[in-house]
Amino acid sequence: MKYIFWSIYIASTPYEVGHWLCIPPYKKYLPEDYPEKAIRKHEEELLPPPSYWLKPEYENIAYQLK
Image (cartoon, rainbow, N blue to C red; front, side):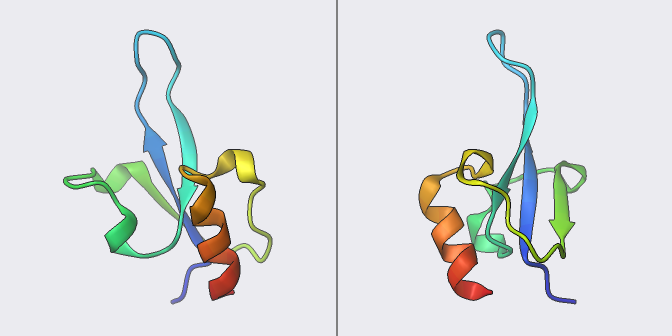
């Protein structure tokens, strides 16, 4: 199954509540030792807006792969 993008959970800090951000659907973009339950795989046709991406350049990579 091919996923359009993945989202990963960014844990809470003393200053911010945890939240989900998006990355391209490849393991090379995952931080090391990332817990499996903190990854969602998405097949939606529409990609999230720029503010939802972990890094701005990730959105461009995912759009190019589509």
